[in-house]
Image (cartoon, rainbow, N blue to C red; front, top):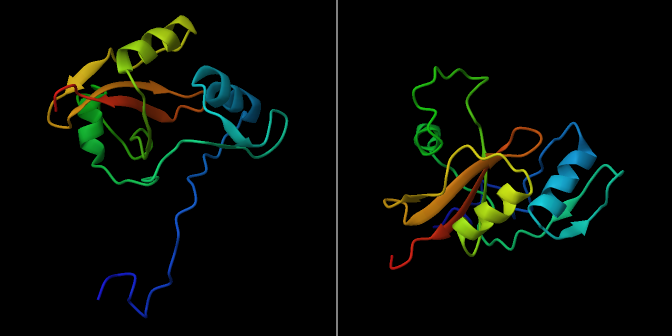
Length: 143
């Protein structure tokens, strides 16, 4: 019996992750103009917007301490309030090209593009205007 066949659970279908933001227009501009995601609903000045992220795997769990290593914060004293609770992970065609383009738009990064051999990806990390952690990645060539 799979978990979907369990008569004691409610069948669910994942729809989205909703970021609760304080500055809607600034966040909208970041995701639409800076990152270049296509808005599928909403516009500046409204209260809700969604963006096309072309994902078949919209929700993932990951050990927080491993993300701390990836963004080089493992030496800092972490508390419940300082610990990142989520990361928005977006695949891009070429991390280095994306890094250069976003840097020219004034985006500040937490790290330089780097290979994460054990993950099989090349990554960079940044934060959105609401301080949410974002990971941009592309697959390592030859892996």
